[in-house]
Length: 196
Image (cartoon, rainbow, N blue to C red):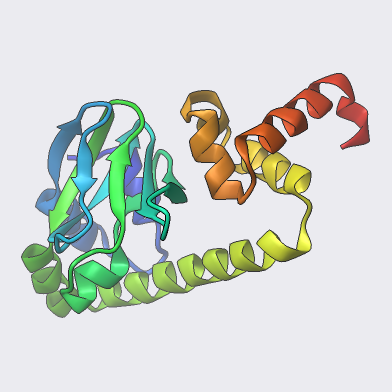
């Protein structure tokens, strides 16, 4: 079984073909419909998913009960709540499908088994985690150092599917702006594309 999403996700120079074959074999094809929850707040994550097609997001509820989007998951990315999965604690985040999603699921016990059996999977995990940590750190710094317009343009460039399918409110909360501000930013970009 070969699949492009798995191949892209586990693209790591040190894997042997037989190791990849075993890792791929351990994944199970799963489908979700638009609006389905992949993980709910208060529940412990017992698996992670590799997104083959579709769009999902994670969000928390702030102190006023408003949903704040913390991440968008696009094709060939790992859908995971790291803290809940590896610390074995209830999740503070929700993960929900914005569109219908096709995924490859790997459950916690199988992952642990493979993790101890295949040293290169441990190396891949370290590499993946450091990339994710860097991306989260960069995003948190950019929330203070870049204008809202620049942050929107970066999102458009890096994850155009989000702009295409996610509701305005979800994108605004992810960028840390109000719906009204985001509407204004979008209008400005359309009317003055060269300025940005």
